[in-house]
Image (cartoon, rainbow, N blue to C red; front, side):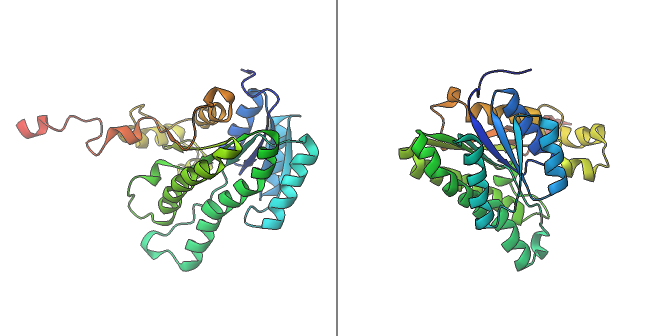
Length: 264
């Protein structure tokens, strides 16, 4: 189903060659935008752009390379003459918890935090010149809870929530809104890999800590991103939006009545 929510707008989506990223790109396009899919994996990036149709273009590049970011922005401006939306979705999941090496810390924080900041800085002058824009950072429910065996990923996502606030503060004068979206468990490439493609099993595992009783679809999160990117969200900036199936609302007692256990 298509809409005109983003009619006339252009977007850059990093990590657009992933299952999640492609869903976001397709949603933005369905809502009227033209999208540049940025992906370090040339095969999956090209395939994603092809699947998205004529309103998508593909840029093969590494977001940790500032020269590549400059070339990316030049390519987007050459194609469209403007950049309205930046979705910082590309992410590293490299995390060995307490056993993580310095190299793992450095690489993951570079991808998940530093690159988001550099991409925001790169699009800022163009958005400012055209009268504004919208930046959406993909964070996670992991940003606000401790998870056994995971250190770098949740720390990076918590930092990204704070970066979102800081960006929103300093970019407000340029009429650039900056928000983040924190999904709960969402069907994605990593879920597909870990479950060996078993969505029903994934839903069963996720059910106890999601009020919806399942993992989310990437399209559901993409709809939230599209709204935040649109003029419908003109009053929203500096906010972290939970798109988590009630994960963050549930609390440690989950959805099972605990008090009756005292009377049993």
